[in-house]
Length: 272
Image 1 (cartoon, rainbow, N blue to C red):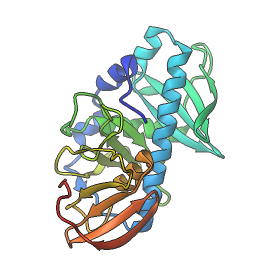
Image 2 (image 1 turned 180 degrees about the vertical axis):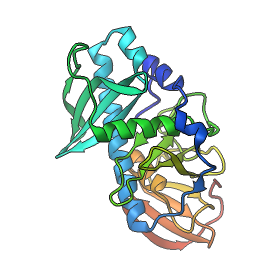
Image 3 (image 1 turned 120 degrees about the horizontal axis):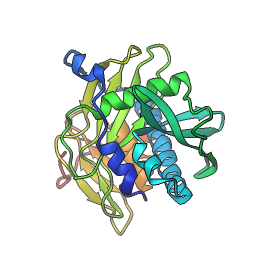
Image 4 (image 1 turned 60 degrees about the horizontal axis):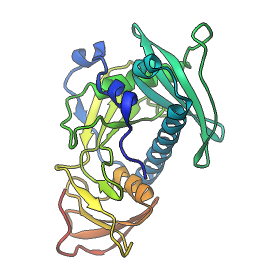
Protein backbone atom coordinates (compact mmCIF):
# COMPACT_ATOMS: atom_id res chain seq x y z
CA UNK A 1 0.00 0.00 0.00
CA UNK A 2 1.19 3.47 -0.79
CA UNK A 3 2.55 5.79 1.86
CA UNK A 4 3.18 9.48 1.25
CA UNK A 5 5.55 10.33 -1.59
CA UNK A 6 9.00 11.16 -0.31
CA UNK A 7 11.87 13.55 -0.92
CA UNK A 8 12.19 16.13 -3.66
CA UNK A 9 8.86 15.26 -5.26
CA UNK A 10 6.95 15.97 -2.06
CA UNK A 11 8.95 19.15 -1.56
CA UNK A 12 8.24 20.36 -5.06
CA UNK A 13 4.49 19.83 -4.79
CA UNK A 14 4.47 21.59 -1.42
CA UNK A 15 5.83 24.86 -2.86
CA UNK A 16 3.56 25.30 -5.86
CA UNK A 17 3.08 28.84 -7.06
CA UNK A 18 -0.42 30.27 -6.76
CA UNK A 19 -1.94 30.52 -10.27
CA UNK A 20 -3.43 33.81 -11.40
CA UNK A 21 -6.95 32.42 -11.73
CA UNK A 22 -7.09 31.34 -8.08
CA UNK A 23 -7.30 34.86 -6.72
CA UNK A 24 -9.67 36.12 -9.39
CA UNK A 25 -12.44 33.53 -9.07
CA UNK A 26 -15.68 34.22 -7.27
CA UNK A 27 -16.49 32.16 -4.18
CA UNK A 28 -16.97 28.60 -5.45
CA UNK A 29 -20.20 26.71 -5.07
CA UNK A 30 -20.42 23.31 -3.36
CA UNK A 31 -20.20 20.22 -5.54
CA UNK A 32 -23.43 18.19 -5.16
CA UNK A 33 -23.63 14.51 -4.29
CA UNK A 34 -23.33 12.32 -7.38
CA UNK A 35 -25.64 9.41 -8.20
CA UNK A 36 -24.45 5.91 -7.32
CA UNK A 37 -23.43 4.96 -10.86
CA UNK A 38 -21.25 8.06 -11.09
CA UNK A 39 -19.88 7.44 -7.59
CA UNK A 40 -18.80 3.90 -8.54
CA UNK A 41 -17.22 4.92 -11.83
CA UNK A 42 -15.51 7.98 -10.38
CA UNK A 43 -14.08 6.05 -7.41
CA UNK A 44 -12.60 3.44 -9.74
CA UNK A 45 -11.13 6.18 -11.94
CA UNK A 46 -9.55 7.94 -8.96
CA UNK A 47 -8.04 4.65 -7.77
CA UNK A 48 -6.61 3.79 -11.20
CA UNK A 49 -5.07 7.25 -11.64
CA UNK A 50 -3.67 7.22 -8.11
CA UNK A 51 -2.10 3.81 -8.66
CA UNK A 52 -0.53 5.03 -11.90
CA UNK A 53 0.97 8.00 -10.03
CA UNK A 54 2.27 5.79 -7.23
CA UNK A 55 4.00 3.24 -9.47
CA UNK A 56 5.36 5.87 -11.85
CA UNK A 57 6.78 7.83 -8.91
CA UNK A 58 8.68 4.72 -7.84
CA UNK A 59 9.94 4.23 -11.40
CA UNK A 60 11.02 7.85 -11.62
CA UNK A 61 12.93 7.66 -8.35
CA UNK A 62 14.66 4.51 -9.63
CA UNK A 63 15.77 6.50 -12.69
CA UNK A 64 17.80 8.76 -10.37
CA UNK A 65 17.08 11.96 -12.25
CA UNK A 66 19.30 14.95 -11.49
CA UNK A 67 18.38 16.77 -8.32
CA UNK A 68 17.53 19.94 -10.24
CA UNK A 69 15.05 17.99 -12.38
CA UNK A 70 13.34 16.55 -9.32
CA UNK A 71 13.16 19.95 -7.67
CA UNK A 72 11.63 21.43 -10.83
CA UNK A 73 8.61 19.08 -10.71
CA UNK A 74 5.45 21.06 -9.99
CA UNK A 75 2.89 18.28 -10.40
CA UNK A 76 1.75 15.40 -12.57
CA UNK A 77 -1.16 14.55 -14.83
CA UNK A 78 -2.48 11.16 -15.92
CA UNK A 79 -4.06 10.68 -19.35
CA UNK A 80 -5.75 7.55 -20.73
CA UNK A 81 -4.13 6.36 -23.96
CA UNK A 82 -5.77 3.16 -25.20
CA UNK A 83 -5.14 0.51 -22.55
CA UNK A 84 -2.43 2.65 -20.93
CA UNK A 85 -2.43 5.44 -18.42
CA UNK A 86 0.32 7.91 -19.34
CA UNK A 87 1.70 9.89 -16.40
CA UNK A 88 3.55 13.14 -17.14
CA UNK A 89 5.54 14.88 -14.41
CA UNK A 90 5.93 18.50 -15.40
CA UNK A 91 7.79 21.66 -14.55
CA UNK A 92 6.86 25.23 -15.41
CA UNK A 93 8.63 27.63 -17.73
CA UNK A 94 6.80 30.78 -16.74
CA UNK A 95 3.17 29.65 -17.01
CA UNK A 96 3.90 26.94 -19.59
CA UNK A 97 4.30 23.34 -18.43
CA UNK A 98 7.02 21.11 -19.86
CA UNK A 99 7.57 17.38 -19.46
CA UNK A 100 10.31 16.19 -17.10
CA UNK A 101 9.45 12.50 -16.90
CA UNK A 102 6.80 10.39 -18.66
CA UNK A 103 5.70 6.85 -17.78
CA UNK A 104 3.19 4.42 -19.27
CA UNK A 105 1.26 2.32 -16.73
CA UNK A 106 -0.84 -0.79 -17.31
CA UNK A 107 -2.07 -3.71 -15.20
CA UNK A 108 -0.37 -2.61 -12.01
CA UNK A 109 3.07 -1.77 -13.38
CA UNK A 110 5.04 0.74 -15.42
CA UNK A 111 5.56 -0.80 -18.88
CA UNK A 112 7.67 1.99 -20.35
CA UNK A 113 9.12 5.36 -19.44
CA UNK A 114 11.19 8.17 -20.92
CA UNK A 115 13.02 11.33 -19.94
CA UNK A 116 12.50 13.98 -22.64
CA UNK A 117 15.72 15.67 -23.73
CA UNK A 118 15.97 19.32 -22.63
CA UNK A 119 16.79 20.33 -26.21
CA UNK A 120 13.98 18.23 -27.67
CA UNK A 121 10.18 18.38 -27.63
CA UNK A 122 9.01 18.53 -24.03
CA UNK A 123 5.54 19.92 -24.73
CA UNK A 124 2.40 18.49 -23.18
CA UNK A 125 -0.80 17.69 -25.05
CA UNK A 126 -3.46 20.41 -25.08
CA UNK A 127 -5.51 18.33 -22.64
CA UNK A 128 -2.54 17.82 -20.32
CA UNK A 129 -1.86 21.56 -20.32
CA UNK A 130 -5.43 22.17 -19.17
CA UNK A 131 -5.17 19.45 -16.55
CA UNK A 132 -1.89 20.86 -15.22
CA UNK A 133 -3.48 24.31 -14.91
CA UNK A 134 -6.47 22.79 -13.09
CA UNK A 135 -4.13 20.93 -10.74
CA UNK A 136 -2.36 24.18 -9.87
CA UNK A 137 -5.68 25.93 -9.19
CA UNK A 138 -6.74 23.07 -6.89
CA UNK A 139 -3.58 22.89 -4.79
CA UNK A 140 -3.76 26.64 -4.19
CA UNK A 141 -7.09 26.31 -2.35
CA UNK A 142 -6.93 26.86 1.43
CA UNK A 143 -8.03 23.42 2.62
CA UNK A 144 -6.92 22.44 6.10
CA UNK A 145 -4.58 19.47 6.10
CA UNK A 146 -4.99 16.43 8.35
CA UNK A 147 -1.29 15.59 8.25
CA UNK A 148 1.92 17.54 7.83
CA UNK A 149 2.48 16.24 4.30
CA UNK A 150 1.39 17.52 0.89
CA UNK A 151 -1.85 16.15 -0.52
CA UNK A 152 -1.63 13.36 -3.06
CA UNK A 153 -3.48 14.66 -6.11
CA UNK A 154 -5.60 13.03 -8.79
CA UNK A 155 -6.54 15.24 -11.74
CA UNK A 156 -9.14 13.68 -14.01
CA UNK A 157 -9.50 14.55 -17.71
CA UNK A 158 -12.19 17.04 -18.77
CA UNK A 159 -15.67 15.60 -18.34
CA UNK A 160 -17.51 14.98 -21.62
CA UNK A 161 -20.05 17.69 -22.34
CA UNK A 162 -19.15 20.13 -19.57
CA UNK A 163 -15.38 20.24 -19.99
CA UNK A 164 -15.08 20.44 -16.18
CA UNK A 165 -11.83 19.04 -14.77
CA UNK A 166 -12.24 17.44 -11.30
CA UNK A 167 -9.15 17.48 -9.09
CA UNK A 168 -9.03 15.38 -5.93
CA UNK A 169 -6.76 16.28 -3.02
CA UNK A 170 -6.17 13.14 -0.98
CA UNK A 171 -4.69 12.84 2.49
CA UNK A 172 -1.73 10.45 2.26
CA UNK A 173 -1.27 7.33 4.30
CA UNK A 174 1.44 7.77 6.94
CA UNK A 175 1.39 4.28 8.42
CA UNK A 176 0.90 0.98 6.63
CA UNK A 177 -2.65 -0.42 6.84
CA UNK A 178 -3.97 2.77 8.51
CA UNK A 179 -6.33 4.32 5.97
CA UNK A 180 -7.18 8.03 6.07
CA UNK A 181 -10.96 8.45 5.70
CA UNK A 182 -10.83 12.16 6.47
CA UNK A 183 -9.09 15.05 4.80
CA UNK A 184 -10.10 14.42 1.19
CA UNK A 185 -11.43 17.19 -1.07
CA UNK A 186 -12.63 17.80 -4.62
CA UNK A 187 -12.07 20.94 -6.69
CA UNK A 188 -13.86 21.43 -10.01
CA UNK A 189 -12.17 23.70 -12.56
CA UNK A 190 -14.05 25.00 -15.59
CA UNK A 191 -13.07 24.83 -19.24
CA UNK A 192 -11.84 28.43 -18.94
CA UNK A 193 -9.44 27.45 -16.14
CA UNK A 194 -11.42 29.10 -13.36
CA UNK A 195 -12.43 27.61 -10.03
CA UNK A 196 -16.08 26.52 -10.13
CA UNK A 197 -16.87 24.45 -7.05
CA UNK A 198 -15.35 22.53 -4.16
CA UNK A 199 -16.37 19.96 -1.61
CA UNK A 200 -15.09 18.32 1.56
CA UNK A 201 -15.70 14.60 1.94
CA UNK A 202 -15.55 14.67 5.73
CA UNK A 203 -15.85 16.94 8.74
CA UNK A 204 -12.90 15.53 10.64
CA UNK A 205 -9.63 13.65 10.29
CA UNK A 206 -10.37 9.94 10.70
CA UNK A 207 -7.91 7.10 10.19
CA UNK A 208 -9.14 3.50 10.27
CA UNK A 209 -6.79 0.60 10.93
CA UNK A 210 -7.27 -2.47 8.82
CA UNK A 211 -8.87 -5.12 11.07
CA UNK A 212 -7.13 -8.43 11.60
CA UNK A 213 -10.30 -10.35 10.74
CA UNK A 214 -10.56 -8.52 7.37
CA UNK A 215 -14.35 -8.32 7.61
CA UNK A 216 -14.23 -4.71 6.52
CA UNK A 217 -13.92 -1.11 7.65
CA UNK A 218 -16.81 0.74 9.34
CA UNK A 219 -17.46 4.47 9.10
CA UNK A 220 -20.37 6.85 9.72
CA UNK A 221 -20.77 9.44 6.97
CA UNK A 222 -23.15 12.33 7.65
CA UNK A 223 -22.60 14.61 4.65
CA UNK A 224 -24.40 12.61 1.96
CA UNK A 225 -27.42 10.30 1.66
CA UNK A 226 -25.27 7.44 0.38
CA UNK A 227 -21.57 6.53 -0.01
CA UNK A 228 -19.29 8.69 -2.16
CA UNK A 229 -16.47 8.04 -4.58
CA UNK A 230 -14.07 8.30 -1.64
CA UNK A 231 -15.58 5.18 -0.10
CA UNK A 232 -15.20 3.34 -3.41
CA UNK A 233 -11.60 4.55 -3.72
CA UNK A 234 -10.81 3.52 -0.13
CA UNK A 235 -12.41 0.10 -0.60
CA UNK A 236 -10.31 -0.51 -3.72
CA UNK A 237 -7.19 0.81 -1.99
CA UNK A 238 -7.64 -1.29 1.19
CA UNK A 239 -8.90 -4.31 -0.80
CA UNK A 240 -11.77 -4.87 1.59
CA UNK A 241 -15.40 -3.80 2.02
CA UNK A 242 -16.24 -0.46 3.57
CA UNK A 243 -19.50 -0.32 5.54
CA UNK A 244 -20.96 3.19 5.59
CA UNK A 245 -23.63 4.43 7.97
CA UNK A 246 -25.65 7.35 6.56
CA UNK A 247 -27.93 9.97 8.21
CA UNK A 248 -31.10 7.91 7.59
CA UNK A 249 -29.66 5.12 9.81
CA UNK A 250 -29.01 2.92 6.79
CA UNK A 251 -25.86 0.87 6.35
CA UNK A 252 -24.28 0.56 2.93
CA UNK A 253 -21.72 -1.96 1.76
CA UNK A 254 -19.07 -0.64 -0.61
CA UNK A 255 -17.07 -3.53 -2.03
CA UNK A 256 -14.94 -2.07 -4.77
CA UNK A 257 -17.38 -0.56 -7.25
CA UNK A 258 -20.33 -2.59 -5.92
CA UNK A 259 -22.50 -0.40 -3.68
CA UNK A 260 -25.62 -1.71 -1.96
CA UNK A 261 -27.77 -0.93 1.05
CA UNK A 262 -27.49 -3.79 3.52
CA UNK A 263 -29.35 -2.84 6.70
CA UNK A 264 -29.76 -0.56 9.69
CA UNK A 265 -26.81 1.23 11.25
CA UNK A 266 -25.17 -0.42 14.24
CA UNK A 267 -23.80 1.55 17.18
CA UNK A 268 -20.16 2.26 17.63
CA UNK A 269 -19.10 3.38 14.15
CA UNK A 270 -16.69 6.27 14.08
CA UNK A 271 -18.18 9.53 12.87
CA UNK A 272 -16.76 11.68 10.11
